[in-house]
Image (cartoon, rainbow, N blue to C red):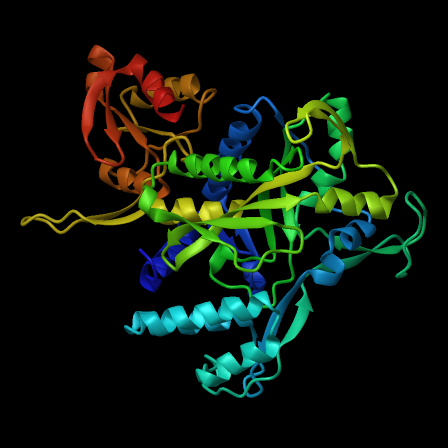
Length: 495
């Protein structure tokens, strides 16, 4: 599936045509790297959120959820390091005036080389890039670009500026008058605030609130789903990299010195969660970070084999005690936990300490694209007698936007009434779709295109013996079943 640009474009087109994803404010020619989720996209997105949320907060007794505000006191981002360190190295082409993120520019060149058979060169260039990025060696990175004669896709020239850092946070004014001054907490007036670039800090500043009110004992986790905003200079690849996106994060608070074992534990647990969707183990891999973030002592990504290649969908990070320690320093509030457990190293109680943290962070929009990409399939169903094909989205039934389509064969003879009764019986348990228009074959194809796993056809035999024809999306097999078994079959599949 990797590096299949035609497939990727087909998925993007299908997403718009069938109500999954639209360019934002498209009637005004859109806004770059901002997208709206349509009627089926919003359902799929919600189902992914529910699947993650329930797996975290229901299946683990020691993980609870919160919903922190997007706006936070600006000192939060000074303490977290985002004000000083949340930058991307960028380079401009002097002829086209187009700006590139340095790693994207070099990775694009490596992909081109790999596609033309120069795989060793591609590996060497990427290895050099990783080493230079780890040292923040911008002069070396520019030399790497120049030595390999990497060109701008627009101008076709290699006339590059020096590499510079750009901060990725959106800022705005909070209050009635413009001011860069930050008043005391709860004070009046205006001050500069940021749209949060990540959801994690909302968890860290609420660590003590949750621990005390929930009487939580370490180890324990706090989960959150929420919007984040990054002023990506070079946003690309559909919803893979956007300026407004959602994260599903869990911060797991642990005893100092246990981070290695918990890091390995959450790597395994998170991969299990992905594999449970059934998209194939070979489609995933771990990628260890060469350059660690300023807060981490270990980090890796779970990468998925998208049509654009293996790309990050989830990160697992050992954040040490950096965040809580920083917030303690800047806020002057103690962020400590008292632990009666025995430290095996000293054979004494742990006592007071600032907990260490293991983070699991998954991009909801990237997960949406993963599910859409893995589910999308073009099938040639032609026979010697007839040309035929279909596009089907083979979503796991639990994630499918629509679970059941109820399709009366005719608009008369009492068939719609039977269909409506079945609809009323099922709609309180799962999402259903009712349609009478067009030939049954066309209706099946429309349901395939939005990924509905079950279609039920009501015909004249239904009136005689209370049976219906159920059609299974993936195999297109049909069978006759009792009408009163429909709800049970669908519920069993979506559990």
